Image (cartoon, rainbow, N blue to C red; front, side, top):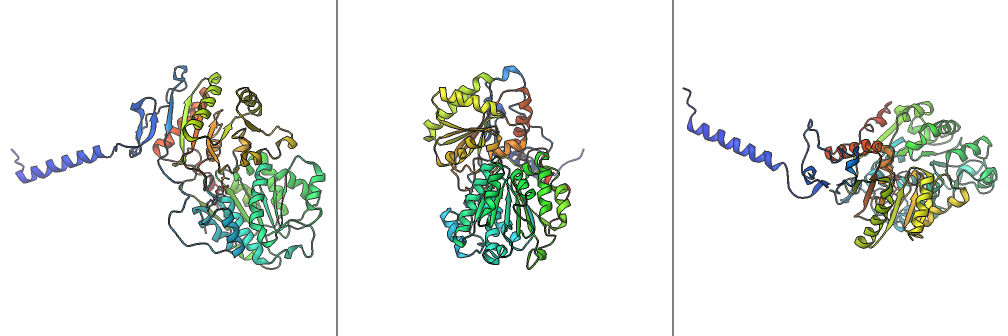
Length: 496
Ligand SMILES: Nc1ncnc2c1ncn2[C@@H]1O[C@H](COP(=O)(O)OP(=O)(O)OP(=O)(O)O)[C@@H](O)[C@H]1O
């Protein structure tokens, strides 16, 4: 018989009881991260899944027809966006003119992305910035660009050569070009620098007109139009200071990447910060995006030394936004229009209205849905890539000005457009990829935008379900969306 001393036995009992208690207390009651129609599938915001634990998914049976009507919500568990700086940290130093311009834009404190990027650009590094949607990347590159142009002296490059510009920002759409140019004009105004846009679809006469008189200091262009301008020798990039590629995932996509490479070969990209200063200087390359496809490194390695590219990657890149409520609804195709109407009504009743973006996968759906909304008496605007340039021009601007509360669009409206007033994003058609979901959802929850915003996605087809399951798994695991983890480190630009 082995006797256990009474004291030791007591300690063993106490430890067992305490361990048992600890185990139970890891599941905290309170706010729910996942709220399901079936309460047994709810997940508390305080519950952390074990590494090898398989989450039970609300969307598990959604390929089956019986699941129509089912729904679940990923709740907003953070009050503010991860890129908002809460404490007063070291302020960035700019010329007074820039500080005043920022005040007119209600910008008083940099976001985390701006804090990281701006000093690196000012030091002359080539930069690859990968940060979540709405985190203020545009100011992150425009501020140091204008600061440097000012420091180098007004219009110095135009003295001898009529065709040169000092900074080029390349963006995938005309709407985005107008938007970036508007920010650039605000920043450039105190120094008298000129910003112009160069967009496609308007013929050679328009392109020549952009460069006829008063060369711009900052040119915001779409790739097709810029290639035409370069081939016709309307402008010369040999004395460029900055070459910015915004919305990198679209620009490095195979549909654009050949054009991009051709354009980059017209510019002389620096291989180290020293080359960006003085006579015969080379251009600094800034590549910016919220999602990054593979192949970025391939193209970059052909125009610069990858080792010279500093990588800024935000912590929450490719994660679901913790401050935005995201609901998924399994619904029959024929019922989507009714659900949309309900959602618009709810927004009006519960929050007093607000701007809404409705995303469709095809231009034809945008047109059809537009007619249906018209029949229902819902005022709206439409934006899709197959519209004639003249009809498309200004649609997004008038939505931003508040001409109509609802904009029905294709993914053309999902990349980069600043929709600060939008309170609800509806994925009328489920997006085709993770990247599309991130960009569409990223139209809400932006820096300086309203809190209490929402994304509503209609899930209709069996092939939509896989994407939803991956999004739900990522939310439950609090991990980034699968398949997007390593894309910006392949092949590796080294951090400096
Ligand atoms: N420091 C700041 N403080 C407050 N608001 C800011 C700040 N920086 C930018 N903003 C505002 O945040 C909004 C989003 O900025 P921006 O469009 O640059 O985001 P982004 O990171 O480029 O997003 P996307 O990936 O969708 O293109 C804009 O309305 C901008 O004016």
